[in-house]
Length: 157
Image (cartoon, rainbow, N blue to C red):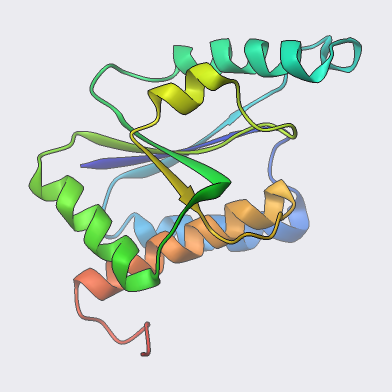
């Protein structure tokens, strides 16, 4: 099973990039993993929120396969403990999912076409975080889940 991490926005800021890259490399010891940063449309500043989300949705959908399991990160989603996340990933692996795609939407969220396409909507917290911080938290939590699955000592209960 492969893990694809997609984020709409700018490339990793240097102050967060090192941490994101470190945890992503660690995940790579367990699953093939890659980041894809989708730049917002060029005329994004001239669009209203609804139109921007529609345009971003088109870009996101171009990067999804029919068989991809899409996990949308959204503060209105279901919260999981680290152990529950590990179980979630293991279940998808057991179901022979070829690719898990974790999506961090744009600054205004995602269009309803993406919400409907998502197989699961996951909330890291009821709090709203900057995109760069969400990328770091996502990478760290996925690494933590991998270590839980292998019964390694990174995660302490």
